[in-house]
Structures are given as structure tokens and as C-alpha cells.
Length: 135
Image (cartoon, rainbow, N blue to C red; front, side, top):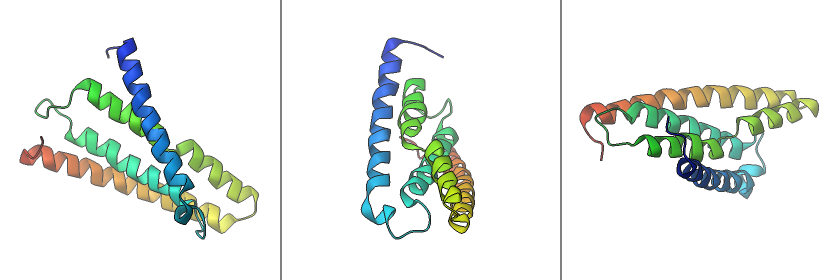
């Protein structure tokens, strides 16, 4: 792994974009209100699970994805986007408030959806790689 100031700045910039998108998703009214589970957090965790697996499934020697680009997307952007710590906190707070059904629903839906997203992302990335449909 190439540890340079330039790479760190690239990761930080990509992470800032991911953080801003996460903030938008968790703040957007329809995703915040009127749902049993925190939908914004669920959305970014599932999307992030899919995208990190998609990049992993797509990236090989045959696909022109530089190590810098891969790290910027996975560690930077998706690291800023996904919110496992937020998921854990929100689920714990639901449980502490006595909303056990919501806490268990959030835990179950998020866990299953993220694992499904990883499976679909790996499959989709590998399918594009095998079919030569990469840029």
C-alpha cells in the first residue's frame, strides 16, 4: 500500500463527499419521519454494502481501476457514507426507549439487507468483469 500525503488527501476528500451524502440521506424528511426504522441510515448502509462489494467484484488486473481509485472509493467515499456506528447507536437508543420491535426490526432488516447487497454487488461486479463490460 502506497502511504503518501497525496493519497491521504484524496481519501479525505472522497470521505468528505461520502459524509455529506450520508448527512443528506439521514436528514431528508421522508426518510426520517413516519418510519419504524431509521430509513436514511438503512439506505446508506445498504447502498454502501452493495457498492463496496461491487468495486471488489469488479476490480481485477483486467479492469482499469487504479489502486488509488479503489482506495478513494472504498476507504474514502464509502467509509464516509456508511454508518455502522450510527446504525448501532440508533438501534441501541430504540431499545433503551423500550421500542423493542423497532430495534429488532432495524437490526434484522439492516443486517439482512446489507448482506444481500454485498452478495448482489459481488455478483454484479464479477458479471461485468467476466463479460468485459468495464470502461
